[in-house]
Length: 466
Image (cartoon, rainbow, N blue to C red; front, side, top):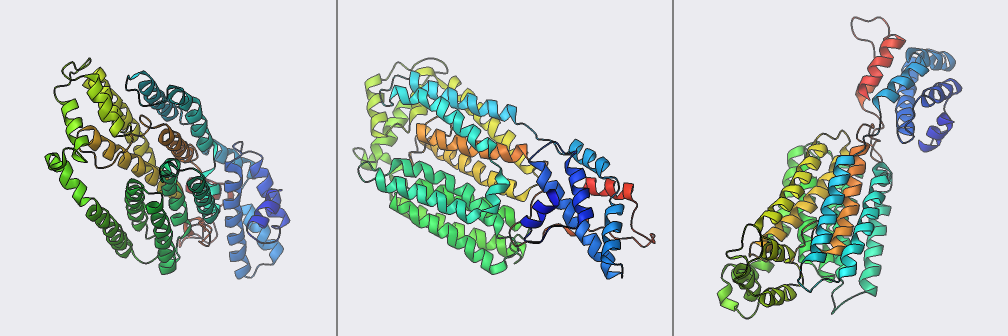
């Protein structure tokens, strides 16, 4: 069965009978259903390469097939060893932290007396966010890697449909939130361009350019900034591996030049606004009102308990003007700095834990997508903290704590990231068009050997490489 399936997946006819029987015996010992096709595929690739080597040495096809299978050793022992090594790694701790942060944010929005947010939506986001988290968690990230263009096209079509059907005063707020999903889709696309050289670079730049061109239509400079920063992070990650095949330095330099040019354009557009933020007295009745209001609210807030020197009416008016983006300021005003710092410690503890898992991932696809997701979360939190401390460059909601729609979208992205962590023990499938398996798995006799390693030794070597 597995030989036929792998043959169809590789675009070839069914594998030889003895190799098929060997693969079926190995697959019968592997209990993790998601690992079974990947591992048997790797074994099939190795067996076919060994068979080709023996054919090149002058063996008949039947003898070459038999010798390749014999050198792999006992299939039951090999399958049992692979089953012992490759087990899913449930991410219960990170799942619990994500759900806890989301619940804390929803309760904060519900309990704070700011009069801005609909109470029912604040509580409804808890089950909806949990559902999106689990939806991302059960997805197979390698399946996305097999269909990168389909993922990007589906996300674009969905965002366009929302943009065309729902707007408030010419702005599609929901489409802005959905745009945060694009870094993950673009990461999958970049991964699929391995070894395509300058054509791959051109395709990646075109994809980011296309998505970047959408953001002014929504409009959202914050989203453009997030996509640009995540693109730089993923580009630098892939440059270390010379992913496109044009050289590490060229890839890194191109990433920094193009990303820096876009960020420079954003900075030029935002320059008048930055001047007012730094000197709000220049426009105290316009844009500078937000900055002055935030700084007045935060001045002399207590460590624990409400601030009494400023009326809640003044706070409520400031929050309405800022469309609820300053919810963390309301939290500091009503509850003090300690609850705020506790939530920040919990979030950045979650972030560092996820970053550590990302750095230890074996799979390049998982590392690329997780890097994009973590960079998007970090960028959102950075601009949200700027707003909280009196520098409202963007009305950026803090991840999982502020904004119902942003919370739902971010929970899906976190679920997708945790899915990559759970499957981190699996060997990575080759990117479309790339070499199927690394050369290290093609085992040949050394100078001190007159023949290939024995079956048991070869089995141990193969398990070690996986």
